[in-house]
View 1 (tube, rainbow, N blue to C red):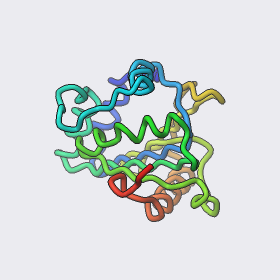
View 2 (cartoon, rainbow, N blue to C red):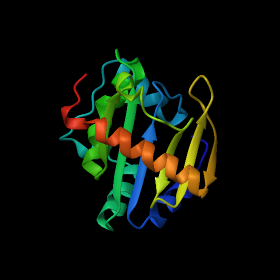
View 3 (cartoon, one colour):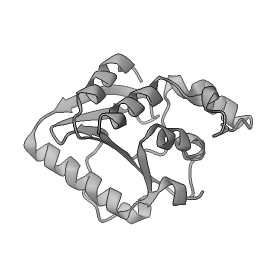
View 4 (cartoon, rainbow, N blue to C red):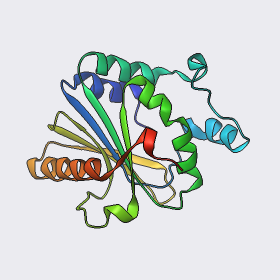
Length: 174
């Protein structure tokens, strides 16, 4: 993504209680993931027991936040059958969990009755929402931030509804 890790890290570090993330796309074209995606396509699978080979800066940020008492949750709404990208993403989600994130998956058909915002988002302490806006090919375009109370309420309700219906990562098999 074009947003720098340092500016996003500042948002995570400013969280006091919670950071939640809702993902709703079946594919992302994030340049930072190109090499990993290509390696996965060639058959590379990360070894959970070889932490040194996959632990990176994001994991440090998550671990630091969780250690401070921030509950970090990520919910993904996905189509079934799964896209190639979702299969790739699922293969390394154990790294998020190992860092301290809670991750759940919701089949898109189970989200039909939910009111959802138009874009993926992060919400910090229920006070700030960062929308991640992508183009039709899954490339990051920009982020929008808001503290609008109605938007915060919509995002909080949407995340809560998805979270309640979703399956924890360890139980969501592809």
